[in-house]
Length: 254
Image (cartoon, rainbow, N blue to C red; front, side, top):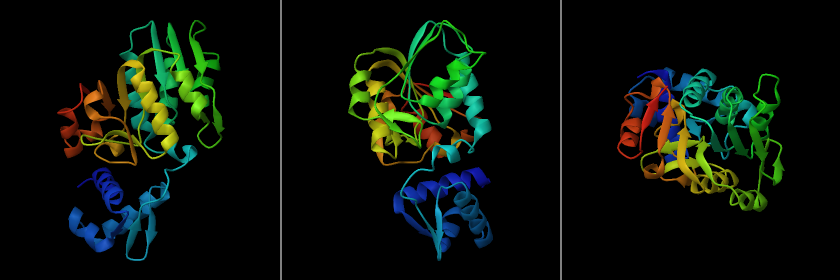
C-alpha cells in the first residue's frame, strides 16, 4: 500500500474512532510497526493527528489555513487548472474559503466575464493582482472576520448569500464520501457552503485525493447533489472514489 493510501486510511480510522492504537493500525493496513510509526510522524507534522502513547488521536480541529496551504499543493494546483479550463464564461460563481479555492481563484483571475461571490479574502485578493482581467466583478460577503481563515462568516454572511443566484458553487470540503457527501469540520464553514450550494444551479466539489473517502463533522452537500467532483489522479482506484462515482453526477480526474 502506497504512503498516500495509508495516510488516507489512517485519517478515515481516526474520523471513526478518535483514537487508534499502533497495533490495530498495523493489522488494518497490513504493514510493520516502523511503517505505522513513520506514517504517524508524517501526519503529525502536517497537523492531522497527535501521537500519543501506543497510538494516535484525532485532533479536535482542522489544521490552520497557513498549514493547509502547504499540504498537497501540486494536486490542488492541478485540480484548479482543470476546473478553470472547463468554465465557459460569462458566469456567476460562489466560492467558499479554503486553500484549494484560493489556488483556484488565482486561475480564475486570468479569465474574463466572471462574477465571483465569496467570503474568502484570500480569493478576492487574487483579483487585485496586475495580471487579473479588469472586466471581472468580485463581491466580498459581509460578516465577522475570521483572521485564521482570512474569511467572513456569521448570520450576515448567510443572509447576503440569499440575495444572489449563481451558475456554479465552487466548494472545497474537508472530506467527501458516498455516505456523507461533502463535509466540513467547522459549523460556520459548513453553513456557508450549504447556503452557496442551495443558491447555485450546480455544485462543483474540489477535493484532492487525501479527502476522498474520509468523513468530517458536518455535511453540507449530499453526494447525490454534487454535480461534479474534481480530484487528482492519486485518487484513482480507491474504494472511496469508486463509491462516489455511483452517487455524484460526474467525477473528473485532473
